[in-house]
Length: 291
Image 1 (tube, helix red, strand yellow):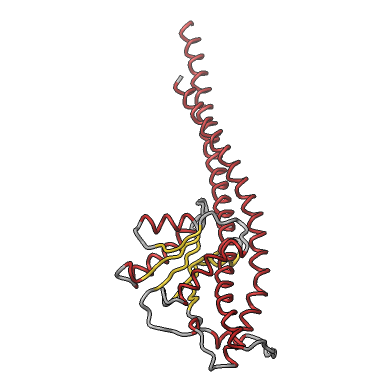
Image 2 (cartoon, rainbow, N blue to C red):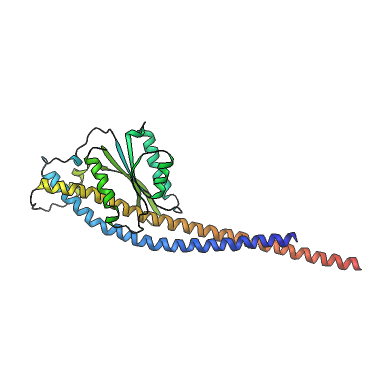
């Protein structure tokens, strides 16, 4: 009876693991589909980002007398951290890598919560900071798997305005940069102030532009739009990374389920063989006793 009970337990574990495997396999396929679309979205946004960068750099460097708060470095009294995470887990180290980097940076740089504020995208990041009593001034939860600019426009605009109003004196983005389906890199990038204008100009073309009404007025409009576009670009990059990380995590889970099923099947066969051997021995023993 003990062997039969053991066999039933092993069979239940095999059945349970097989059902889990079906789920993780389905989630892998869904994430692969979402990743393909997210990767396409991120790549298609690059030409717009590069063009607005080129125009901004051309204006700022051709008219050095033009001043704008977003181009000026000032004493840092309060820092802002824009953190992109996901709303769901089961994505491997996608969230933990970003959150660990932000947390370590804040612990190293700041002695008081008055010295910084956090703007966060994603429920995982929001709950992480809330549990640790860290100040979150703005957040957005429930972001779409394939976001458009309208999904983040208000948050991006308000974040950039915080810098313009001197509520913060610098803004740094933290997100996962999508390198490939199996490689996502935790990235920290200073967004404001825009200190890389000269580098941007060096990489832009030498095209000549005619501006109406004038360069200074256009720069006032373009600079906030450029900063907002960088936030949106990071979000698209992060979404591609999220789906890739979840796809990889689900693939690993499926592989682990296969390994576990193989081990359990081997144990089941051994236990079944042992039960059969025991029954044969009992029969032989019974026949010998009758003789």
